[in-house]
Amino acid sequence: MNSVVVRHFSGLQDYQPMYQRMVDFTAGRDQNTEDELWFLQHERVFTQGQAGKAEHVLMPGDIPVIQSNRGGQVTYHGPGQLMVYLLIDIKRKGFGPRQLVSNIEDALVATLKTFGIDSAAREDAPGVYTNGRKIASLGLRIKQGRSFHGLALNIDMDLEPFRRINPCGYSDMQMTRVVDEVTDEPAFDAVMAELQTQLVTIFGYDSSQLIKEPSAS
Image (cartoon, rainbow, N blue to C red; front, top):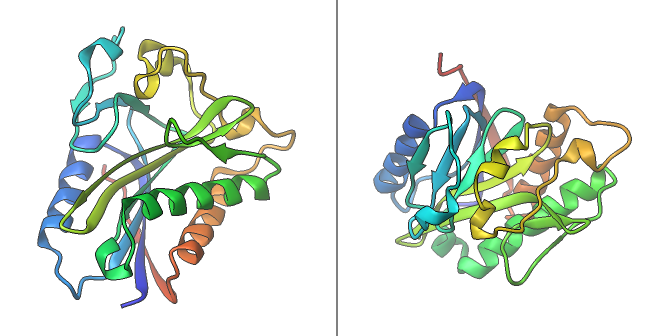
């Protein structure tokens, strides 16, 4: 099976219902279930990884902190940040966790290059960086050879909440956004469309079916 279902969720999504939907999808899929890529934006939320340490949550204030079963430490999601959940049967595709991470990072780097941003991954800290600052984060989990959770790309979001935490467990981590790294600001949808193209290509899907999900509200 070499096709993928792409879902675009309109509006801002609450984290908990989307998280549960992702968990339920992964638990209920079988060897004939198509892979899916979910594109969305979340309401403001801090999410703590499975092994996350409480000391990295400094001053959450009015933003809720929600426990998640993804890898990694605490991070922030909010409007203007593109989330992509990658629900992929990596066992069926014939590669392991390292290749999954590399493919995601390569897709992000290629996307950012399209908009004139030079970026790269780092061996010591998963994600994608430009000019020493983090522009995209990864948080994944694999269960029975199937991945869920995914990536967060900062496009045009308020970065202030990142100062309320140690992003991804690093007290000195500096964050940036697409709009801070370019002269001509690209539209959010243009970045999303390019990243979708790069992911579909890098993961070797022959075809994709786009489904537009109505707003959660």
